[in-house]
Length: 59
Length: 140
Image (tube, each protein chain N blue to C red):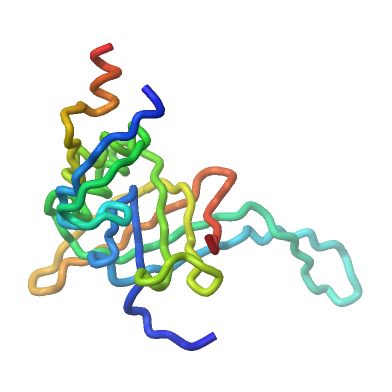
């Protein structure tokens, strides 16, 4: 799935890219990077989409 | 160029800003020195630069919360993942000719946190450039 931006929230204690903790942002992250960031608690997906890797696994 | 005291450096790993959890950064670019000496009147060795190794060693504070140092770094080592690292000297201003950013793809070939009773928990981590693009300085 490409070309779809996702809305994320920075949930960790440290900034993610240029975004501060608590901030939301739209981006199209590399699936591997997204999965690592989700697993370590840096970000969460807001808006109901699941992670790209999980989507691929369910396809 | 003015002298500077390193205070505002920015260091990012895997898109996480670990600047405040790091206290030292040392880049080391070195070329293997290949001896191509022949017989000569002076006897002085002749060298050519060989393969290049680029590393960036960072002293991190031992930090084990969600999204912090261990949570970012250990999965990269464990899963042999490729990540992007970025270092620039002033996090308060954008990347520019006077605030260049060292960046590129890197891997962690080792990971060794530790602790000493009564001491601040810090440990060194070395990021090694592993692809042909290497690490380079960017001004934009």
